[in-house]
Amino acid sequence: MNAPRAPGVTTSAAVRATGLVKRYGELAAVDGLDLEIAPGEFFGLLGPNGSGKTTTLHMLATLIRPSAGAANVAGFDIAASPVQVRASIGLVFQESALDRTLTVAQNLRFAGLLHDLAPRVIEARSRELLELFDLSERRDQPVGALSGGMRRALDIVRGVLHQPRCLLLDEPTIGLDLPNRRRIWRFIERLRARTGMTVLLTTHYLEEAEALCGRIAMLKQGRVVALDTTRNLLTRYAGVRVRIRVLPASLPEALTPLEVGSEGDSHILQLPDYGALERMLTLLREAGIAVQDLEVMQADLEEVFVQMMHKF
Image (tube, rainbow, N blue to C red; front, side, top):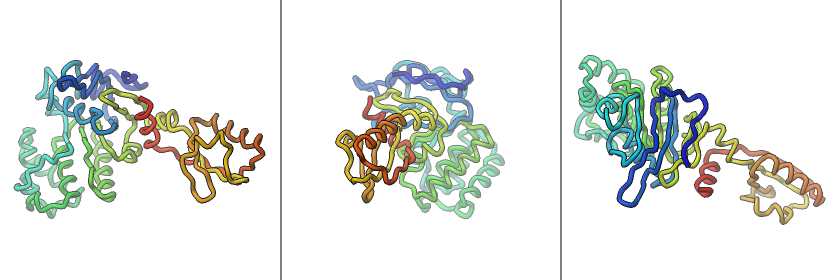
C-alpha cells in the first residue's frame, strides 16, 4: 500500500521518496516506500521493530544505498549528490556519535569542523546551545563523565550545530526520564520555529509522536499502512472508547465482544465509530437496561497503532 499524497504538501518537498526499496537477500526491509514531507514539517515515522524505520532513515542520510527507487533530501538526490545531502542534514541516531574520551567542547569543535564551520562560529553556537541545555559548566569535562540524559542532549546539540535544513531523529529520547525528554523536545520545537528546519522522527514513545508530529506514517514490514495528520488518524481509526455504568450491571450478550476492560462497576467498551455508540444506546433501551453514567474517553495514538498493526 503506497502512501497517499497529503493535501497541502508542495512539490518543493524537504524529503521525497518514490518507490524506495532496500533488500537484504530475499528480505525487503523497505518495500516500495513513498513519502513526501514539506519544508518545516515535523513528521513521524512509526512502526514495530523490523518495520523499516531505521533503514529508511539510513537511506535518506546516504549511509546505505537503496536497492531500488529514488529519494531527494533538501533538494538533493541521495544517490547522485550524497555529499550535499549530508551537508544539509543533522543526524541523531540510537547509538551516540560522541567520542567519550573528548571533552564536550572538543566533540562540538570536531563536529563543526567536519561541516566546514569557522572556529568563531563553532564557539558562538556551542556556547548558545550548551546554555540552553544547562551544559555550559560541563564544556571542559570528558563526555564519558556525563549522565545519560546529558549525553543524549549533547548528541542533539552536535546534530544541529551546523543548522541543518533537515533533522533526522531515530529514537532520540529512548531510555531518558520524562524531564529530560521534555527539555529536548522544547529545544527542538523552538529551533524548528526559529529556523524552519524539517524534522523526521522515529520513536516508540507514541505519546511523543502524538504531541509533536503534524503528520505520521505507520510502517509494517517495510510498507506504509497509514499516513495522515495525527488528528485525522485519531478520528478515522481510533474509534470511540466509552466508560458506561448500567442497571442491571451486566451488559447484553451482543455488547460483550466490545468490552475491553472495566473500572469498578463501569464497563469500558471500544466502538468502531459514533454510529456504533448510537446503536449501543438503542440496544440498551430495547433490552430495558438503564444507563446510569456514560463517558466518551479520549482516544490516543496507541489505539490507532494497534489497529493498523493488526489490520495489515
